[in-house]
Length: 125
Image (cartoon, rainbow, N blue to C red; front, side, top):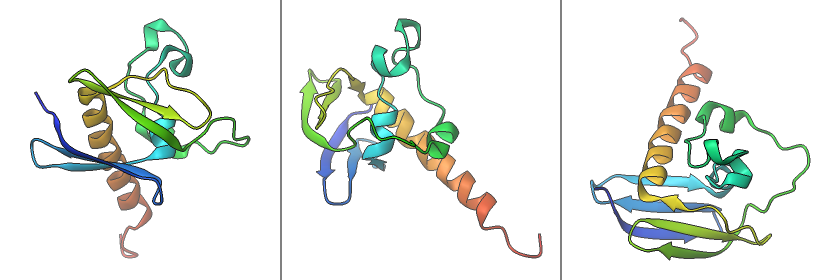
């Protein structure tokens, strides 16, 4: 089972960095991490709770009215399997399991790479 070997909350850069036991490091922008909150309130129902978000949709989301905090006040470990961030607006219902964090980190990297490849194609193609 994958586990973090290091977790850094970089408030200045507004990102969470996690070093994983397989040697991979994922960076999570805090706004994306909040939008990917797995709790029932954020996912829209118990049947969707914990489901991985669609990264392409998250990358395209532009909130017109900011109703959520994208700053973490505190990170709390949940046993040996998860983290719960407490956001500065008080929201703390999301339990981000190691598997969930690893998967969204991987999916985010793939979505960003795909987006960059589409945006920066050579002129002759």
